[in-house]
Length: 309
Image (cartoon, rainbow, N blue to C red; front, side, top):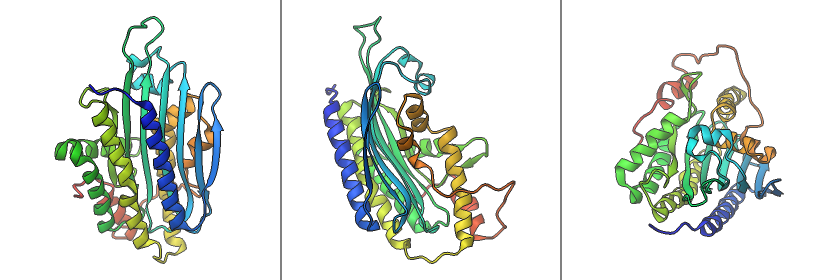
């Protein structure tokens, strides 16, 4: 069993944030705002945000490293054995909302947790694990774009478990990014994993290797898509539908997303946590797309699990 090395994980995450922000600033042409913060109770982070950019209407690439005396309810409900343990959590999380409705929203996250032995069990072993993934949320999708994104996800996973592991993480993403109250997918899927290492299937080097591969794959998965579509013309009709579908993003993040719930319940920085929400959103009562319309294509062909590879 390889040794747990949280310092190396932190160094990687800080470098990943810097690399991604550098590439996005070059693409957009406008710099990200840098906001360094401390968390009462332990830790802090670096929030990098762009608003009203030339291409991105809003985007954030956040690094956080926080500590606490007890795991929040969102974690212990999922993992009751963590109750009574202090914790250390670090990660990079990003969400990008382009202004152009033909360019998809995207999310990526890689994270690492350590839950230390409870006070009444000083000899117990620490529990550690990795989590993360990335997923695509198009409004007016193109098949070649969605296929490219999924193939990039697959290529990131194949060296760490082959086709079976890719299928497992792809299907986990399909089931996780799902709005149960609407019986509807949030987007076109990608990858999702949690408890990697704690499940006993990988040692530290294997779990960190897969997590690092997913983080490193992000720019190659997403940048070619927005490079192809950034100059597509759009009207207020497409913009209106984009705002409507963004409402699904808000609903998922506030009701179901583990990272959002963990951050808020653990006393994280609210501004940094909620930077994932889009700036312009609309809801309508009992709306349905016209059959055969471009909007219906999203519902009929892209919000249903599919073998995109």
